[in-house]
Amino acid sequence: MTVTKIRTIVAATDFSPGAVAAVERAVQLAQTHGAALHLLHAFDVDAWRSLRSVFNIHRLTSDPPQDLQMQQRLVEEAATLATKSGLEVEAHFGVGTPAKVIDVYAKAHNASLIVFGARAEEGVLGVGGTAAKLVHLPVCPVMIVRSGGARPHDKVMSAVDLRDVSVRAAGFAVALMPSAHHHLVFAVDPALDRALWLGELGQVDIGLRESVRIRANRELQRRVLDLAAQARLPIEAEVIDDVPARGLVVRAWSLPADCVVVGHHGQGPLEESLLGNMAQHLMHHTTCDALIVP
Image 1 (cartoon, rainbow, N blue to C red):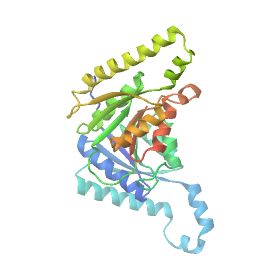
Image 2: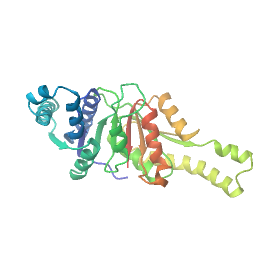
Image 3: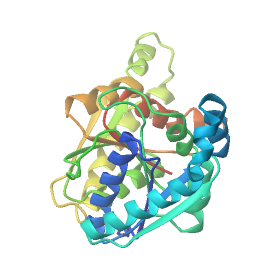
Image 4: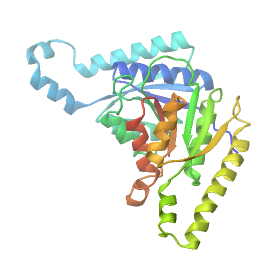
């Protein structure tokens, strides 16, 4: 398996508490991989105009323009981070909606990873609108950060199936977080058992279901061997009997995982019904960081 090189990490910031946590995580990952860190702020003109309509217009216009204030603040933060971390840190300022600015910038700079704050309070389910939109932009992997602190992730759970994208996601997670305990989890829907009892599946389907179980165990063990060279600790793999949407959330909680990983199959009706929808589900129903890999 090809070793993933993490060369450029883009940390999006609006200077909120969630963004501070995201930047802390981005710094930790950049130090781990010796990657360049790009600090990116998107100035949303429409949002600023809305604020001006609410607050005292005379006071707002007596200070330096808000975009210039944000640019200066971004440059100062980048310089401070570079001094403290020893990293190569660049500051970039964009105008437009955050998701669009991040998407365009990541493409232009061949980003290896985008790190973004969830906006929700620590320990609270759900993510903000920009984070949700980023999942549907398959530029590069996106990490949604929920908790502050620069300690490396300890327990990482990857949701896998027999599709290549989920295996690629698990591989990227191991490369990104090589010193974590990695758990590969495959969920088999027990609804198939009920269908068997009710005679709703034919013999061909029964054979397929048994084949899925056998293949899942075999493939998981083979993937563990492939990934072992990149990991510093043994990788665990398991097949669980549960509805995937519920079983994966429960397993992440019971580990407990501090990061969940899922492959995103893309956009469109077919993909939305597969793991693209699962990516959204895990983002909204877990309280740990989430890594979405296209």
